[in-house]
Image 1 (tube, rainbow over the protein chains, first blue to last red):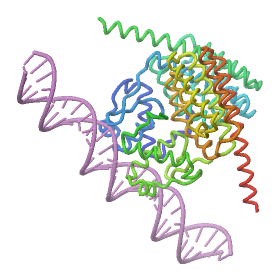
Image 2: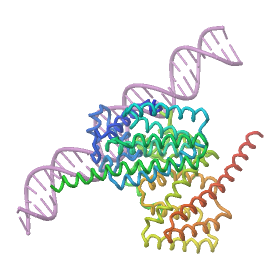
Image 3: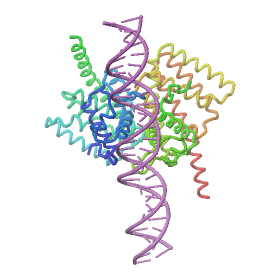
Image 4: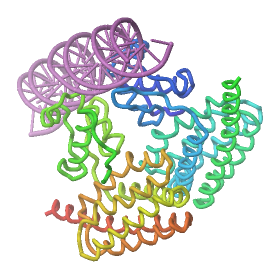
Length: 230
Length: 230
DNA sequence: AAAGACTAAATTGTCGACAGTTTTTGCTTG
DNA sequence: CAAGCAAAAACTGTCGACAATTTAGTCTTT
């Protein structure tokens, strides 16, 4: 169902996906140096494949590489979050506008159905909605834009970094039902083919989301600082 | 001067830059299959380096790769141009807004000086302005946004593809002086720290630019069709 | 003559080894 | 004991060879 198009046909693909998962979920923590030799033994593949995987991770903005020195997992910072969400707001706002224009009636019907499923889950107090549900919602709208460059930039370029922030800061809490309501408004605008409104609502939605994460991140940074100065 | 930060420290870098240049300038024409073995002999490096270069070219949206089949140079199409410029309009508009907010006074002074140099060239009827001047102008504003993700997406992600369209369709003609005037207005808005206006002017500027290229591209497509049906 | 199956050639995917650079270690010297 | 230098260890960069897959060609069959 989710990101189903990403089946690994090649061993390098597989290594890339494994590594990406480990980084996003914090199994390899932020800021860590990535040793090619170490990873090649750990994942039981040649160094060449690890190198290729790291290159792709760099393209995904999940690691930073310096020539002759090596690659590090990016570190999460309040400034980085702001920069990331500025771009995300612009691009996903655009995606919503284009989706209102380019999605087929069938696709919009599917989107409404997805929303219905989520509603049932939220009502039952399931936490499932948090990760997969939200990602799936945004994923469909991004795809609905039908703009290849936009899709590529969001899905390959920044989306897994967004997920990394969200997962590692443990998103949960009172925003769930609010976010669901925002989703509903966006879908309504798209159903009405009102691209302008859809864009504005999406931008707001992402802005709120950023504020929510930023507060957690600042809290975390403060805690770390306190711990270090003790 | 231009893109000076891109010095090749490694042989893979060098191969990447060489290949990219060849593709952007049409020396390797659009749609061509890229054979790894062939390129490795041509550029006198190992296949591994060619592979890495091709991977990076894929990240730059200049080639498309399929597993076990190979890589092709992208082909230029009216639809592709529209999609590309939709994204570019959004991102560079945002860059202009952020630049008005984040550039230092010194950087803005430099930008004004750059404009002065271009004015002299345009007045003298030099064609130099076309490529380097325009690219340099946009380059500075992108950098002025101070947003790493935005910079990376534009410079690594789409800018060389933009150049590929421009170079291969032979941009020239009456738009030069008009474009210069648009540049001047944008710089003025940035100097006044008016981000909103800067964004709007930049979006318009790019929209005009798109229309200019699109007309040439459609002309080309028509010619090709005519030639094929003869 | 067209379609299909099998074989051979060519191409991409993967690997282990060597070369060059950076980092560490330990020694020397002021 | 600190600072600087030198050797060595560890790491990244590059290469050529082998494996797996795709493509081209040939033969067979209807």
